[in-house]
Amino acid sequence: MALELPMDSSGGGICGFIPSFLCYLTNYRNLAPSTIREYRLDLARFVRFLRQRGLLAVQPGDISREIVLEYAQTLTQSPSTVRRRLSTLSSFYNYLQATGQAARNPVRGIPLPKKRKSVPRALTAIQLDAMLLVAERPWHRAAIWLLCGTGLRAAELAGLRMEDVDLEGALLRVLGKGDKERIIPLAASVVAAIRRYLPYRRCRPGVPVLLGNRYGRPLTAQALYGTVKRLAERAGLDPAHISPHAFRHTFATNLVRNGVDIRTVQELLGHADLSTTARYLSVDTGQKRAAVETLMIGGGAGGSEGR
View (tube, rainbow, N blue to C red):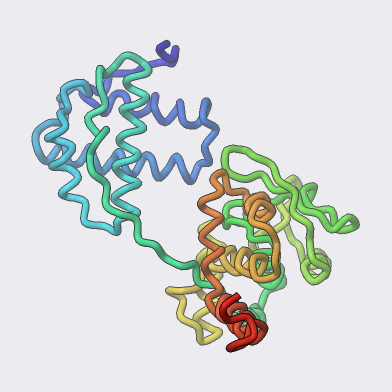
C-alpha cells in the first residue's frame, strides 16, 4: 500500500521529491538531525552529478541503472562512504516506490564495495590520563569521564539533560538513535566527576542540558568533537586517532575484556544490530594469546596427549 505523504514536485525533476523524503525520515522514521543531514548531503551529491550530465530535469522513474552505475564510478571515497551514499539513494527510491513516484529502484542490485574489516582502537589508561591532565575547563574533564565511562555517542552526550542524570542512584538515561531510550549505570568515578563539575555549570536559565559551553549555551556534538581533538593535541597524542567515538570504543573494549556478555554490551551501547557490537569480541588478541598459553600449561606436553 502506498504511503500517504505530501509530495512536492514543484522543483522539477528528481529535486522536487527530496524535501518530502527528508520530511518522511524526520516525522515517520524519527531519525536524528545529524542523520538527516547526511541523507541531505548524499542526495545533493547525486543531484550535482545529474546537473553535470544535463539530467536534472529527468523524472525519478526515468533514471536508469546505467545512470546509477555511472554515478557510482564517480564515488572515490572510502568503501564505507560509497556504500552509505548508494544506500541513501536506494532508500530514496524505496520511498519513491512506496509513494507511487517510481516503478522500480535502479540502485537495487548495484554491486557495493566490500567493507573494510577494522578492529576498533581503544585508548590506553596512559592516553586517558594525558587527556585529563590537559583538560582545563571543568566541563572538559566531566565530558572525558562521561565518554570513557558510559560509551555515549557525541550527540547523545551533547543532548544529556539534568533530569537524565541520577547521581544518587548512579544511573544515566540516554535518548539514542531513533529516540530509543536506554539506562546506563554510572561508575563511582563518573559520578564524582559530574559532582565536581556541577558547581561550575553555567548554563543559562531555561537551558536544561548537563553540559554547556562557556557562554551558557547548550554544547553541540561538533563542539565536543573539536574539543576532544584539541585536548588530544595538547596531550601530545595524534588527534587523527582520538575522537569522541574512540572513547566509545574504549568503553566497549573494556567491557568485553572484563567478561561482560555481548548482549549486555549491545544494550549499553544502544546498538540496534548485534553484529555491530560483535566486532569488539576480536579486539583483544593479547587476551586470546594468554588464554591459549594457559591451556598449553594446563594440558602440558604429554599429560593429555593422546586422550
